[in-house]
Length: 63
Image 1 (cartoon, rainbow, N blue to C red):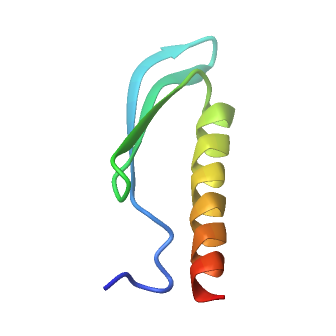
Image 2 (cartoon, rainbow, N blue to C red):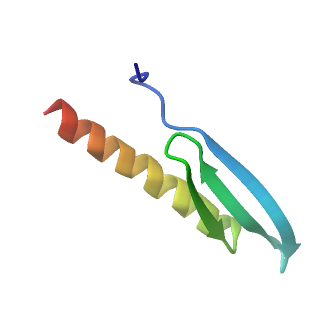
């Protein structure tokens, strides 16, 4: 039974630090999805998109 307030679990693996930012991959553990990122900003955007997508799908299911 999923928790209503759960936003998701993300595992961030930083492989490299170059040009003042991180490069690596983020794993969305709940969905077993891995995405690569080239900057900290891209990492934040990926996580934000995943959380938004989850919220939208929950809203559609509850409607």
